[in-house]
Length: 109
Image (cartoon, rainbow, N blue to C red):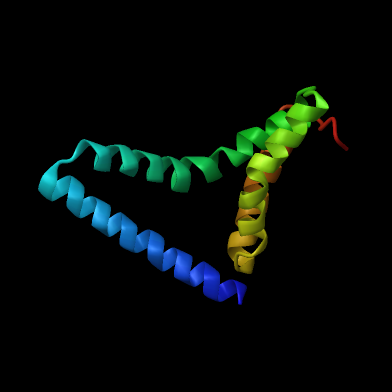
């Protein structure tokens, strides 16, 4: 059931991206450009920011409420990485573990 939902969601995002590209190219609408920027941030920058945020969690002394807030923000990405095929899952884990080990030992271990 979960794979069906992920597949349908992927198709919907791809269709939305194509529709948005047509709006940007043909009509040059400002809202379409802003939506494309938000889509880029959500799809590209959010996953890439998980590595530096992992470093912050492991090396900075965050208050407990801030720590919980950061974990809740990145929980969806953690679920995505858990359900990826094995090679992609390993790549995601290695990316995050690079930041855990960067700059000395972790405070959480």
